[in-house]
Every structure is written in structure tokens, then in C-alpha cells.
Length: 157
Image 1 (tube, rainbow, N blue to C red):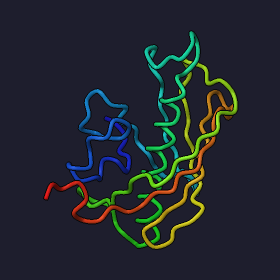
Image 2 (tube, rainbow, N blue to C red):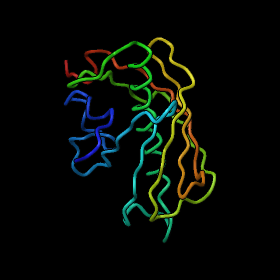
Image 3 (tube, helix red, strand yellow):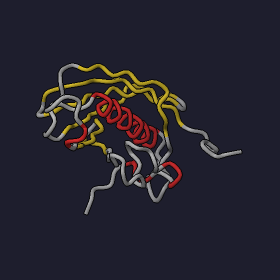
């Protein structure tokens, strides 16, 4: 049995993202949850996620931080607005801004852990600070500014 993440509460139309979409069978399908006052996602890169032999491709690192940030924003917004998550009622956030700093090469093989700290929840905007670690060593950090999507987002008119 797999552990549910915030991404499992997204509406179907918001569940196709390469990084976090549960309906994207070729995607990463990450799961983000609370762990204390922080959010956490764990992901083990595959051999084809390589940059140089033995190291993870930087684009994957950015994608993990990005999708962890939007999932963290949903968790923080739901908590701040007393939303009980059930069915497919999770508010959906998209990236307004993403900043990633690569601190050291990320080894390919060990599980990666992405942790988020909520810096601000203000109206329809959430700011998350993230760190990506391998074997308890921080390899990258990021800042994600996420924006709550309007109800008609993504619908063709």
C-alpha cells in the first residue's frame, strides 16, 4: 500500500504534471506530506536521471524542488484556511517563481529527501524554502513562490 501525499487530493485535471501528477504514468509521481513543521518528499532517482556517471541531472533536482514547493504550498494553504483534505478538494498551486542553488553534486543511487519550510502564506501566494539532500548532505536549496490557481485555470474557452 502506498502512502498518500497531497498530490493524491488534486482534481483529476490537475493530476498530469510530470513531477507530481499521479495520472502521469511516465512522471515522477512524488508525494509530499507534513513531517512536524516541515514538508517532506522522498524520491530515488533512476539510472537514466544522470548528468555525468554517478550524479543526478540538475533539471531533475529543479523539478523535484519545484513540485515539492507547489505541494508544500497546498498543504500550508489548507492548514492556514482550515481545509480538511478529502476526495479531490485540494487547492492547486502553480509556480510563480523558482530559484535553485546547487551546493554540491548530487550522487545517483541514494534516496533524495526534499524538505520544505513555509516562509509565508499571504492571500493566494505561498513562499516555501526547500532543501534537497542525499545521505543527510544538502546538495541543493531553493525558494518557490506559488500562486493559487483560479477555478477556471486550464480550461479552454
